Length: 42
Image 1 (cartoon, rainbow, N blue to C red):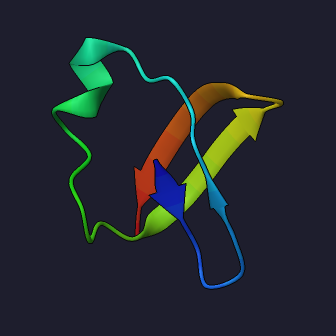
Image 2 (cartoon, rainbow, N blue to C red):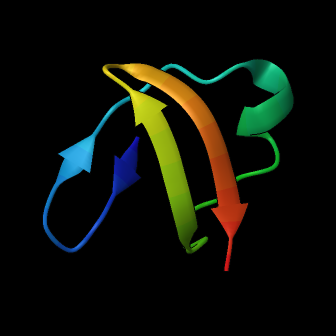
């Protein structure tokens, strides 16, 4: 689950990524539909 100030979306994320992104991380999310593409921390 990923949240912004405006909304919340839930995306399935591969195991190798889910352990790297933790609650409270801030960055730029790239996704297409419901497909997670990339997350870059600020």
